[in-house]
Image (cartoon, rainbow, N blue to C red):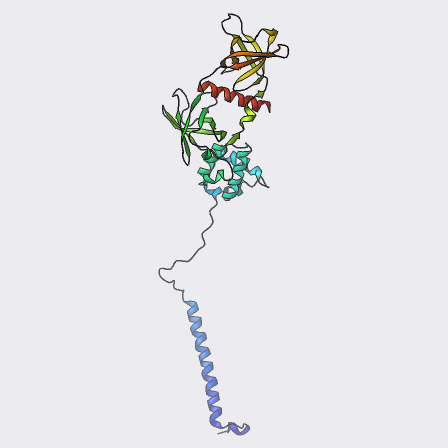
Length: 329
């Protein structure tokens, strides 16, 4: 046999061991490749009871909620407070952005408050955040004098009995009113802490109490601004006890205590008892008893002092003074 170790410095035994190790390693590689190819052909078994983890697709509120035409109009009006008014979807997806736009829209009179509240409730947005940073009707103290009036000049007068989280309960002095549930009303409140005005709606009513919704936008009325309004309005002055035509003239100013009118043809004299009728041609003329207390500007102006009046008449006059003030500004 040929001696393989003749050209090496190692022994024959070491050479055989080396060749055997190389052959063993080669055999292991071949076996591993065969097993790998067989496993690749077999279908992979799923572990029982373990479902694949999938990320849920984000559901957009704009796709889930179907808005009617009036609700869509409110969203479009509020979108004008965004940098891009076309992105109404941003308001539907971002509650904080929607609330901020709603507060600004109510404050500037762009959208009605009640409609905004209904929309937020529809979208499951917390309406308590709507009044954040602003005066709300919850701050009006109990015991405040309250008058409610609708667009048809129906009036109810009473006292704030209870102020809850969502509603105010007013104890009425008279049950003669037509303010049914669902009606929108203007609310005036008078308390030692101040005078307030806001829009609301009737929730429920009975003969002695009426429940109205809390408001997130309350206007504070400064008393000194409404003591006397310089405004021209048509009025009639009828001299009590004299059977002749009434005097149609114009107001010069008006307040809760009286009014100055133009003395047409100087027919009014100091001390005359009169019946003062404001807005005689309107749907709801206001008639108040009074007395001419003085004349001025060479008898061309007559100053009438109003007599003591009941609660309902006083509230009607107060509203008329406020309306005169808004018209003159």
